[in-house]
Amino acid sequence: MDTDILLSELNLDITDENQAIAKSLINESEDIIINSVDSKVPKNLFENNSIFNRAVKTLATDLYYNRTLPNGLSLGTQMMINNLKGVDFSGTSTE
Image (cartoon, rainbow, N blue to C red; front, side, top):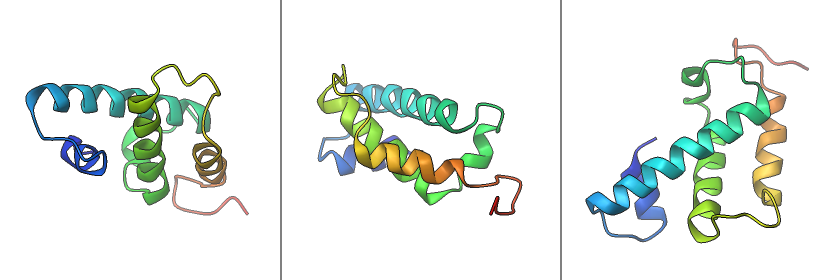
C-alpha cells in the first residue's frame, strides 16, 4: 500500500517523517490482519483485495490516533477480518 494514500486519508502533509510513520503503521497493520486471517497465505495474494486494503487503512488509522488500542480492534476492522476469513485466496469461494 502506498504511504501517500494513507497520509492523504489522515489529512497529513507528505513529509519524510510522516511517510516513515505511515510505512510503519501500514506494515504493522498488514501483519496483524494477515495473521488474523491466515498467516499461510502469501501477502501478495491479499494485496489485490479491496477489503484487505480498507482493513489495513482502518487499522493504520486506529493505530495512528491511539497506538495502544486499549479497546482492541474496532468493530469495523473485526468485520473486515471476518469477511476476509471467508475468502479463498486461491481464487474460489469457500461457500
